[in-house]
Image 1 (tube, rainbow, N blue to C red):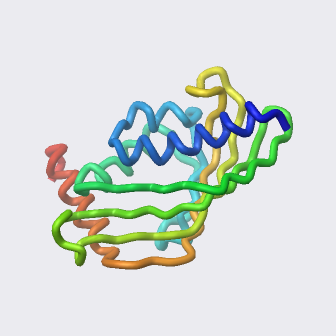
Image 2: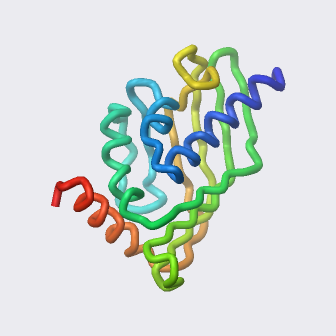
Image 3: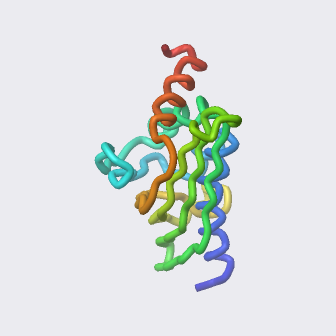
Amino acid sequence: MAADDKYDICETVYRFAYGVDTRDWALYRSIFPDEVRVDYSSYGGYAPAVQLSDAWVAGIAPFFNGLAATQHSMSNGLVDLDGDRAHCRMYLRAHHVFEPEDPASWFTVGGYYDDDLVRSSEGPVGWLISSVKLTVTWRAGDPRIMSLGRKRGLEMQGEL
């Protein structure tokens, strides 16, 4: 495996986290092809599905736009490369904050992402995430802040 490929694959996955944390939805959208397979079933209540990437981004944006802050730390990228396809497993610690001064309104999950990627000149660094699977291994704090954040995010968009 070329070191450049591994770096670019991990860089694409890091942009996943960076796009969410900075609310840069154009950047976030840029790392997916037109359709993406999403599996958040270990988080709870979300069956795996193939979605249009525009719909995926539009659907998750309110959750994060309504939070005061998030920090998705990703590390220990393990990459398997097979020509123009790759698989990357990345550890995750995702911290979500509804009210910064109130630790009771924080929620953190840990686990890992398994992403499948395809080589593409359309990706910012030559790769696109075609499938993302979250495996949650632990949780801390109040998970209800995610629905509160979504509600506030929809209100900010004028949808509630």
